[in-house]
Image (cartoon, rainbow, N blue to C red; front, side, top):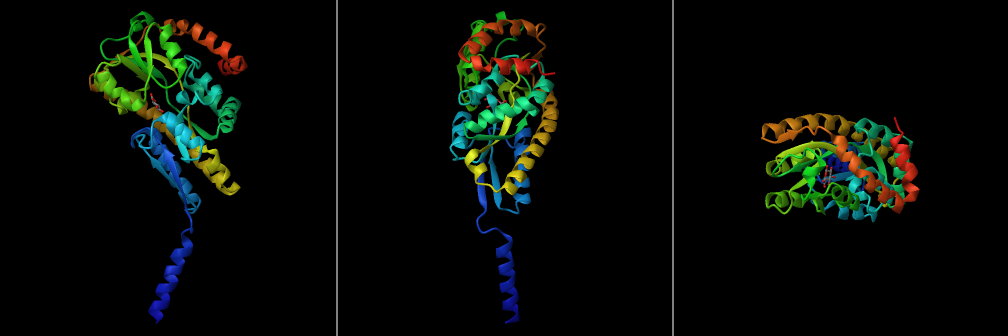
Length: 324
Ligand code: BDP
């Protein structure tokens, strides 16, 4: 009898400790588990679960198992997924203002990108995203992107002539490669390895950590440092999910996202070095392009066409360029 009563009260205690209906959140991630972004997303998930006493249980699905990035953006927008780490490249097709972040050489360096995104201009991007159903809670680093190729290093824009490159899903990148005399094919990230291997494309472009984690270095061993794109990434929550939260939980989620971004940036800096060392040791040839400005100088028509189509974004471009 006594025993039964203890057992019963223990069962009751366990019942009240765990919330009756934990909110299970599904989070999209394109990268493998050991990638800086993935580690930071896991920290975010753990912190949200802990600080909300299990009211929210976020789960991160790595390696794009929930779909390619453009589809995942749609899913977070319509509430089918709760959160994600998105690159602003494919975002441009949905939130036009974010295209400014995909203009080649828009930032002088990664430090300037951080200053822009962490300041008032970053808030303008968050507002534009919110209008399309995405709450950007913090900004991750994605370094700078350079071209890599299967058969020869790129030294000058002339070397790009006639080459076929995979780019992310955004017309601006097609224009960028056009101006260099190459051909660009937008393609899902997951298809690039095989396309490089079979010669469907001659090259692609990315930062060191992705060049490493995607194993593209195995099939495209010439990495030429052009640093032509510096594209920030968000930790975004679906507006539907966000609006269902109490103010208290919104504050917890926001704080966890900001802490996750801080962790991601620190891990990112280490991983860039480690990935470069790894691919070099594996036989990749890292080519220090002597005159990256020659590539930048070709981008005038990309800017002109963009501003002509989006006159309202010219000021944003100028505001970014004058941030120091
Ligand atoms: C990586 C980004 C990822 C992109 C990928 C790509 O982190 O979001 O999907 O590049 O090139 O650097 O598609």
